[in-house]
Image 1 (tube, rainbow, N blue to C red):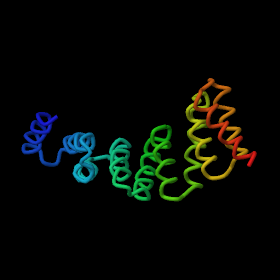
Image 2: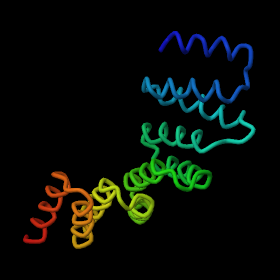
Image 3: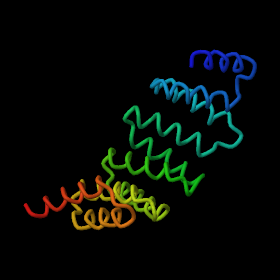
Image 4: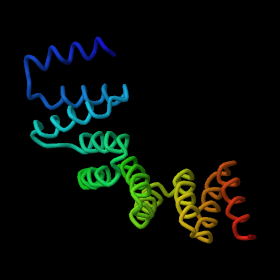
Length: 170
């Protein structure tokens, strides 16, 4: 990894405003959990790019999420989604960040969009069910876990559904 960073630095010395070089250096820093440094590189990549891409903004959002700046991460994820409307990872991360920022409605809408985009992916229904369960929408959570098991029987969905049923019996 250090050798790759060294080579990118050499390339940057020849082309200081190359957006791709800043992006990839940011990704390396992100992978090494150097979130602040990663943010700086990715922000420069966005600044130097002729046209910023969804990959730039989702990378910035990941950095922000790792720094526990969830509201700011959601803002960059909204840009990501405008640029790439069907990117499932963007909706998934936006749902998580919205939830952690305390915006349950936005989290639910993000997971709802995931279910629409990936109707046949049982895991999306499990994520939606978990969100619904955590927010007290117990009946809807049961439906989500039932839908997940209808698509593919899963120990996780059965277990979560059992937890929700226990909550109902209290």
